[in-house]
Length: 317
Image (tube, rainbow, N blue to C red):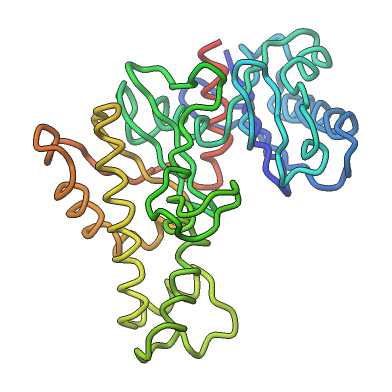
């Protein structure tokens, strides 16, 4: 038996056919952002891409156990993408992805969840915490996402939106966040947060740094400067690790995970933030958990992780 994984991003959607061992038999990429507000047109393109992907693998719909879909602002309970700001056809309302896609593909079972939850499922089935039943997945990209697994099950909450750990407040009255509040973890420990820290330090200190010569500050700029030994750049990542470490100490108190898995573009800078992160977490966690929680990095290929994570949802249907 096989499963189909679909990862819906703001610009592109990735589709893949996956076997039980995590092998990707075929894959297709389509645009997400060229349909304006026409959700029906996007869904028709997605249907065609799934059929094409199955054809390439020599399979038909009857050969799969289901379709798993990971997407921003996705609600597991109702199968809808709800007011996703970075997707035009879903930005002003609710799009019933699971129901529509199932109807278009002969009634195949479709399950939808947010991209961080999908990543957590992928790690539990194929990744570094394979077989682990209690862990927290933290995605460090443009924002900070999370998926919480307790006793082998994702935590969804009563409305399907549980686990927004990127929006806990770490600095009351701090940096403005896209969610409308201030001081969220995401504004400090995402790629955007790293760039914001760099801009603040450049403006508020006189410390010499290669970053002062950059035309455009990004997390990549900061990483490249750190690799070259720039002290300010290194300290920016150390500071990021400390902020994240304090937050992880609080997360541990909630669900007592065996492991915390970090994934996303920012983990490329692990050599600079890992040690301060672990030290700060253990300095701030309750004594009963000190030294017991592993902080791990995803071993899944970034290009495959989204498809594997989404497909993992289908195996649980």
